[in-house]
Length: 328
Image 1 (tube, one colour):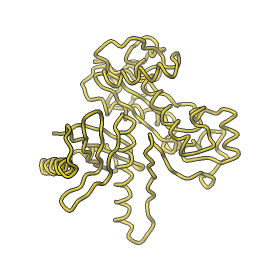
Image 2 (cartoon, helix red, strand yellow; image 1 turned 60 degrees about the vertical axis):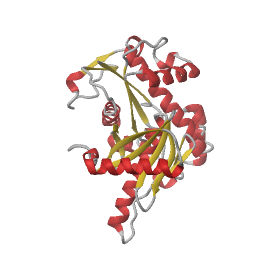
Image 3 (cartoon, helix red, strand yellow; image 1 turned 90 degrees about the vertical axis):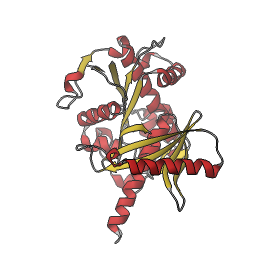
Image 4 (cartoon, one colour; image 1 turned 90 degrees about the horizontal axis):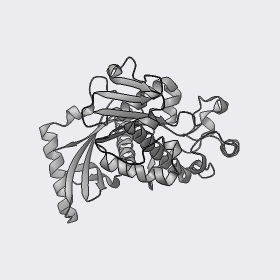
């Protein structure tokens, strides 16, 4: 199978870098470079791709991560994050452009680079559409979180409208302070750090400096990991029903819904993913606890629906998604 990879968001002053990876095992009519399609047509195709493709992964690198890593490293990391979500085997990765973003990684030998691959390779066209729609939707949501910046109109690009908003209101956590036009701004001029994702407001948790540091920091990391997982699930079309649902018998990190299925989500975090991810902690005992919690939730709510367990691995500070898998 061939994985097509393309990115969006390399040039904006604000917002994440987003990369999609897509494996197609079917024909989808109308695929081409996302820039050649209307907004409405992109959205229709993106929904069809997400429903029919053999596998779809979306990688996100935040503005603050990009500032810290630099663009080259951010592109590589974003690509890896997208590919970690691919759930079927593949033998080749086709990346739009002339640069092997996976050089000096374990996937380097899988890569073929191709100019205008988003025009000629269906899976790359699909990736360009999925990435574009995902990022545009995210920036539209941020329009509500940060009034006055008009993110829905310019998606974070350096337009005159955007420049005027920055001059008036200052920068936000979405802005890339390493970019030359924004380097004169400091974090002290930054607006409130709140992300709104598809109607779900998710406040970023700050690491505490209080005396009970160890326990509070661990709790903060856990909260941030669950927030990252919730954001990613929403981006993939899930509706978040509950977070941190607890009884004296059991607890569930996230309850989500997609179509007619309820998903019960366990989030596991590690400081980094170099030596494996947190899903190793999903032992048979833990799996049984997850099954019990899911059944208890459905029984207590008197629901009749399909059930599925999900495990989400996160890593890093701030946490990012390593992979999401269904477990049974």
